Image (cartoon, rainbow, N blue to C red; front, side, top):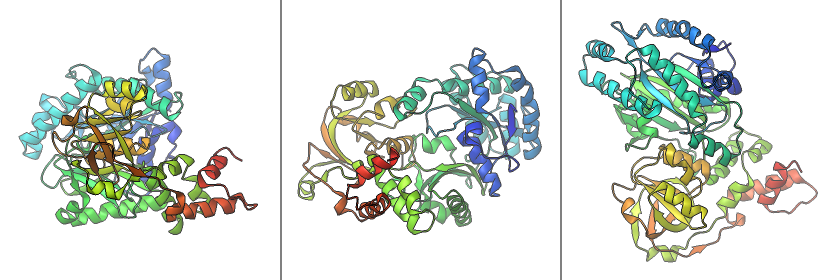
Length: 491
């Protein structure tokens, strides 16, 4: 089939549906509230490119039928009426590629729809904000002003999402990760719910465990009167999830219950995107959380001790590269005491590095590839910065939280990162040599001496070493990283 309605009647096949749509199906299987949606499968991406970057005719003919199903599920009408339906158009590859491909929210809005939304909600400001967001995002992604016909908007958005599979940043990301360029992205079309609707609305991201340090407590952020892209883009400083517990305790409780149900079902730490619309919670998607090397080690041991993983499965969750990163040097405590602190922020991906602050991503990439230790300093990062983020020694941003683009991508890359240091706290340091202690969220002047760590100093590394040696048998006394490399090679 070219188009699939996403509900509990189908299997959550990532290869066919992509991660986003497969996540929606998993949520539906668990009975968790998720806005209705349908998907153009990854097969259609291949056909799109095979036909010279054209949406296949049978797909175009099937769109009205699927849109009518969304209309029926929501009681809204696409393109007009007293209760207009707006949709998001999102990418979704089989392998998670956070922030690499394109999304368009609020699609279907026109001047007439804006007026209808204003009349329906009694809020002209909400309707105008929604239209502004759509027009700005459409122009950025598609490269032109949105057409006046919502169906033309939809066709252009679908093509733009397919096109983003071969964007410079997506290709560079797959190359850096060793991911297959074959397979393409699915496109998910989902009914919009609005975190910017009123004072009992908002958006956020929740990790069921801390993906930075691996502690068992959940880590999350939310932004009242915001939409999903506001949080993950890093363009705003969100509130901690504990604020939601104070503001809307019932929603906070429902969110944690749903997130932990997902974690138990998937047997892994979850990264959950959610929206609250007028006091009702909707989960938009959930996926295995990207985590720092430190967190990967801690969480593998923790989940095994909680009975979610066997020892073999716990070892499967860690790599020699995780161990190497854990054993990197740390700042000498005596030297820290006398050092000049330049900036403080939120830890996003732990580690200690010394380098020169460079604020231009292209310059940072060139200097890093030339062998220089570079700390990329930005107001915030976006997918266009990933080519630099993948090769620099460290990353620091002025705004954004622990769920921002910079934080999520740096954890996956294993690059030490601090976020949210404050306006002008980083970009004014261009050319300065700094030491970044990302576990502490601190940026120091100059190159500070460091001390070497070892697996004997860490209880979780020692536990994994015990398990790995027992699995290897025959009195194998190799270090943990060597044992994990042998496992990965099937030895």
